[in-house]
Every structure is written in C-alpha cells, then in structure tokens.
Image (cartoon, rainbow, N blue to C red; front, side, top):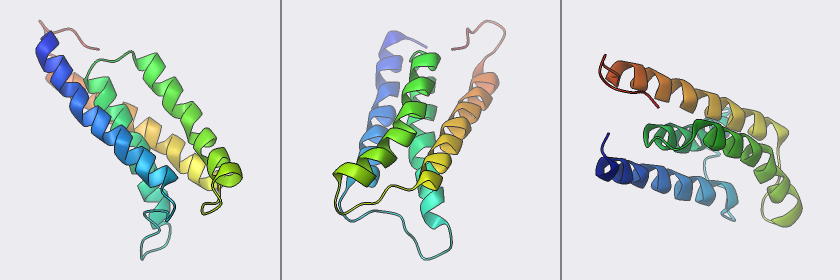
Amino acid sequence: MSSRSRRWALVPALVAVVLQLVVLYAPSGVGSGSFPYGDKLVHAAVFALPVFFALLARLPGAVVVTAAALHAPGSEIVQARLLAERAGDPWDAVADLVGVGLGVLAALAVGRRDAGPDRDRW
C-alpha cells in the first residue's frame, strides 16, 4: 500500500472513531434499539469499526488494540461517573471488548485475502 493510499485509508478510521465517540458520550444514548440487546450490538460495532479500519490503514496493531481495549471499560466509567444523562454498564464494556476482537478478526481476514505472495501484511 502506498503512503498516499495509506493516508486515505485513515479517513474511514477517523470517521469510525468520531461515530464511536458520539454513540458513547452523547447525552441521549444512541442504539438502545427496539429489540433485546440491540445496544450491545451497537457497542460491539462501534468498537469493531475503528479497530478494523485502523488496522487496514496499517496503524500499529498493538497500539490500536490496547487503546481500544482500555477505552472499553474507561468509557463505561466515564458514563457512570461523569455524565449525568448516561449510566455505565459492565456488560457494555464486555460488548465493546467483543467488538475489538471482531475488528481484529475482520482485519486479519481481509489482510489474508489481500496479501499475495509479493505483498507484505500489516
């Protein structure tokens, strides 16, 4: 991947991070949904997407995964203690961590598919 295409690959990662921050910290709580555990699916998705796109953009995997894994429980602590309109939920943190894992697995799958014999993988 050229440096120019790598820079453009960061755009979806940045958009996914902004979406994640809105979903996690907006006063009205996005994603409670109309079906059971819909909020857990939203939590998993908003953690999977930034990890997936950041890894595809070849950001350092250890840094991406560590940051996301620390943000998962950290966001719930912030919601519980600092945001009056929100409540922290340990199961949301679990869903967030599942999302981190899914993002890694998806990026690995895409990386394997795209890596030919003459291409380096992230």
